[in-house]
Image (cartoon, rainbow, N blue to C red; front, side, top):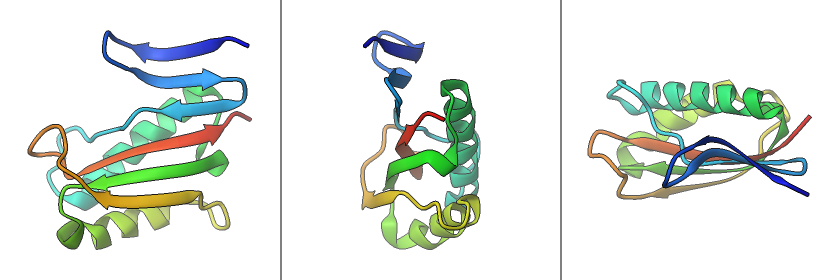
Length: 116
């Protein structure tokens, strides 16, 4: 069985497909500054990568959410996340506080999904 890599550079691939599994690298926001809007941007990137890989949010198996400040950002992130999910399709999830790659990044999300 072969491994397919999407959006690859010398350090990482945006998505890796192995069989029916899709693994996304951590997705970070573009220009938004607050946690809610950053979450919207990240989820839009996830939607696009999953579609390119032949999957969608209803086929998520797991998600890991990294927040710069869990006390300040959890509620805003969670509100957007909950609205994005289809009813009854929540994946397993872990949310942690972490020092992220750039100071302005408040939210980073990585997911694993099954292809359709």
